[in-house]
Length: 272
View 1 (cartoon, helix red, strand yellow):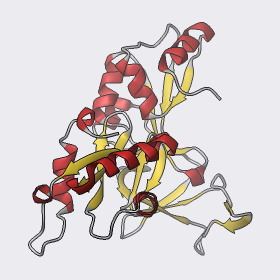
View 2: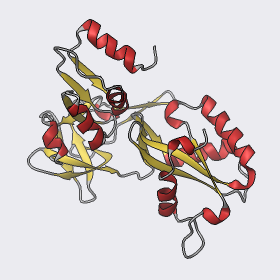
View 3: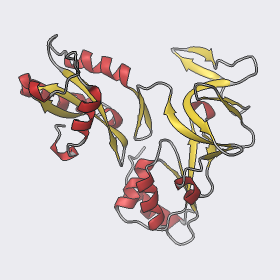
């Protein structure tokens, strides 16, 4: 299959008189960056796959695109909730759940769903694993939510705090940490840390922060990793001297301060 190309895609919209398309925020970002406007007769973008920033939505609306924000997950096959009025969506009205889904929110804010449209299970290592359901037939998701007016909810993030989405692809940071440790083979006393930064186009970007002791080794490994990794797992690199690492009162890395410092650095100034 051909890779995504916003110019080729826009030309296809024009030539084929397409009325409705389904895009992820990264693709919408590319159309907006090119200042493309909806062709004559175009009706709507169904937007899903990852969270979309308010800034990007407003820019797209300013260019004339009509957008239907949606919310879904792998287990629902596609979206199970939507917002028909994007202006209300920007005012945090939340998503409306489709009529064939029953839903509830637990005391821990985890969202549970029940529907004939939820898939039956997972196929892993040539074995079928049924989707776990409670005695009322509800499946407990890893999404957190807050109930709004009747049949509306607002997403609050993920129950698994190490989960992020990049270019619409789910990334488990704990697993990625293990893969990086194995690939880079850092010396035992080598200081390194994964940091997740917001990114307008991708949703997030992953930055590998490392000590300045062995810069050439670090740069070589970053390039080798990025050469074979999927696009959403490609790393940016950041070098910090020992004194530049923020620490807690007991001498551990202060992760929140480190994230704040690294995420302020322009992407163009990072190693890749």
